[in-house]
Image (cartoon, rainbow, N blue to C red):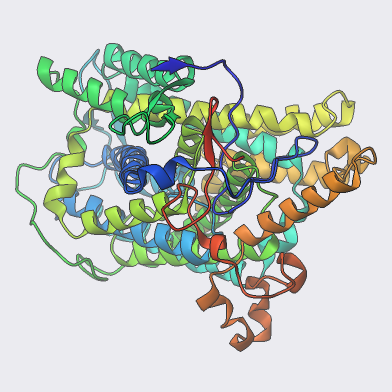
Length: 609
């Protein structure tokens, strides 16, 4: 094992044969086709590495799923569900898997994992809290426990199935509205006006918005939570540049030793496994009781609509669904921009944003029809995991989606993940959310942060986005307009910090006068670039645009779709070959295989040459 000097490691692009596209002035060098690649020498091992990376992304997804269900179900008294929580979790896994495969195949084309987000959870909690108010207590290092309220306003258990059906109805409404927004091309028209001063506050608030829930999970056992966080930080940061030979079984005379940053690439799997084993060995009771079920779940079942009952559409569910759609759309657009930025790609073009939101809406409709109380959206924690690994791949995202779909067919297997200790949930989400927070801060450098205009926009957007939900939560009198659906809409939407940050940043950024350079939008080519550098940069931009293009079988259908839906297809000027067919490497994975041209590993990690 060797330790190389600490240098920034560029993230690999999603599927390009050539170098990734960093922001200027750091132009990539063109790849040397004759240079040997570690993939061609190690061959099948790249699939094993892809599976291990997919397993870690799945652990982050499972942590997010379990955390979301625990936060929603902890308001249920024992026996409140008429079906097994494992089946509820399995249906969520299935819908997340289908949505992930669709998103990476013909959606935004970014390696984004789809999962329930806080933007679904907040309206769901507002909707269910009016059914059966409960108080939660966390005694020391024990698991989360519940205590039924004793006031006369508490309802009986028979309303809980109706309440969850109402939440599923809100998820269906959210998916339909989000899909409509995408099909109409609204994201493509709005996204060009979202500069760094809109993206940065949204990412900062996205990283901070879950701190209360993370602390709640970590408080189940602070020792285990701190150990997990320490191991993840040490593996991803302190030992991130330590590399070990990839093909150590090959004779030294046949090939050069190729080294990879093993600690960084497994900075989730190794810490989670260690802490989980320690928790089981010590017999610590830190499992989420809300997902526990004494009855055995079936080994196999086929998720289908109406399994338990059909979603319930009410005026309150409609209002909650509208707030879900607006908040998740804002969150997803920020997720697209962040993922593209981490992969050194140009910002997502309008057609990619529109397709992405349309398919996310389809995933939420599927989740609601399957009875899940939470929809699907692009997962910020998984994007944070991409930053930890310093690599991202469509192949990995596809594997995660297929794994989730397979797990959704077996509630018994899904039940195994209900045993993830609460400190593990808190530790994993804490580190990944911190990465999202830091990515938000790093976006400030694209604009003139010394400008008084920009300082005001950033500070006001972040502060008010955190203040309004806190004010609603602690107000002595609930917001009451006299009409229940409007109350539900306002309470849900004003409690969404990411939506508030994005909305305030968007309004202030586009109403307060400022130059394009001051706003971070004037990032053209510097005049000092040589003709060769300018040509290289232009080619890099063209290849980055191709990453968002549709695969060839789907692209050929663009001429057959109605004119109003042409916003979902790339325009000729968006492609690198003036509308010609996609090249072989366009849909390739970041992790190479034996049939393509690949990067070589440098001393700083995976780097395209």
